[in-house]
Length: 142
Image 1: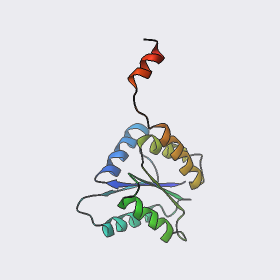
Image 2: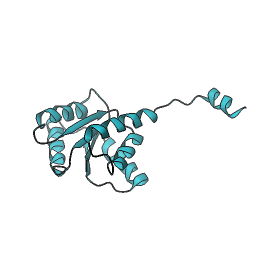
Image 3: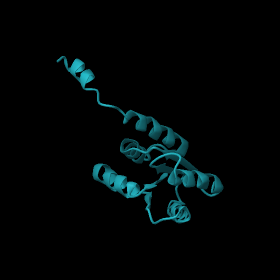
């Protein structure tokens, strides 16, 4: 099974994990790391490394970060390179709930971390939209 690690600013990781559990049940081989205000980047890296150890028996690890170009994403990306001889890691920034739930459920049949990463990105794009009241009215015939 491919492992999932979720990280982000504040309680993003624990919060989105709560939503995943509510909608899809308690996931296996799934860990998270919150990056709290009082944490340094060294502490964040330490916590991510520790959680990666919990996923050591996975066939790959997909890390979901809240946003790109920020510490959780950057540190995860750097670790994916530093630890490439130990772990097969892919990192996604800009995580949304739809992509995370789909990736979690797809781990039952997707066995390659690159394929799961692509699936999650495709699914994530589907869950981004802006409500257009005028379009809604046209489609409903009003």
